[in-house]
Image 1 (cartoon, one colour):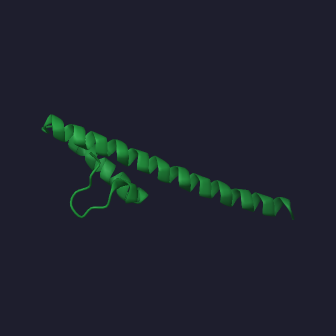
Image 2: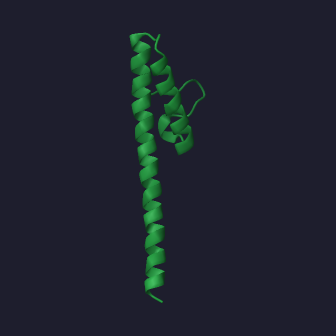
Image 3: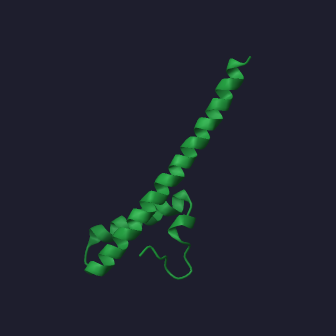
Length: 79
């Protein structure tokens, strides 16, 4: 149920900023109400997938920062 709109990339293919912005829009639509149960569930499922994508991308960014800091600390310690 995480299918993108026609021509839109799949959730897994989005960058962090786009996934975050899409998640904000999903939350806005759910909070506004007036949706059918099926539409609400579809949006909820998409929101869950978007949140997981954001978490995965942030974890990757943290790992890259940790690696960069580790290299920097090793360089400093070695001098």
